[in-house]
Length: 261
Image (tube, rainbow, N blue to C red; front, side, top):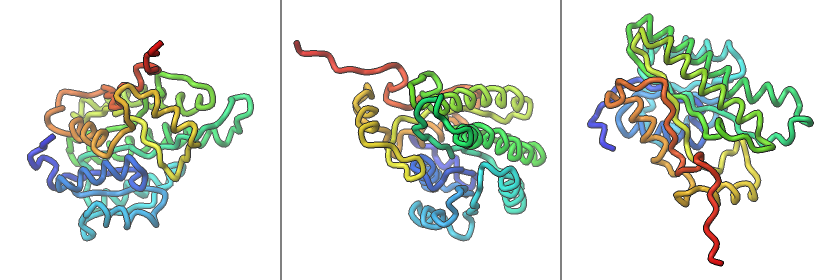
């Protein structure tokens, strides 16, 4: 999709920028000339990300954000305010996707970690950055990265599914309450993309997931970024509170090839 320079000079925050989807999204905005703030708890990896996506070292902000720590999120807000005044676009991409096993055996600290990163952090990030937008008169937008797991409930991943259902409802509430300020909030549900070093998955699980995708492949580096940029663009100026699945049909249901017998 050709955005015709629409994002040139736009100030964009991407959390989880050292991850798979965060890196892809940051790279897409960098190619369109956006000014980036790359956020991740793995600060040591962000300079390599910046170099890989050819973002300008002089204008790119790097922030080692611990999304479980509200003071760290507020510090990110202070950094953005001092350098930009307010962002134009915020992509809440950071998340954890652990295979936790059965609920009866789940440690409460792990439950809290999942909810803190996948839900509470998005609430706080949006609160902090929306306040800056309102203060500066910026009619910006947020895109929160969800998951088709919000509509599915497999054993072994219940807390993750819960967190993504909660994120979807949170996003719709944010969209409703920020609409008077002409600030939009939407959700993109990416397809399956294994390979995270932060939330590693066993090989047999990856094989099972790939086998069930109706369009026959995992998510690629352009799929989710294109959807995120569309929802961030003027073409989507009348879209808020929506959820866009970009998953090859994976969230429709379980795909099984027809038998030849």
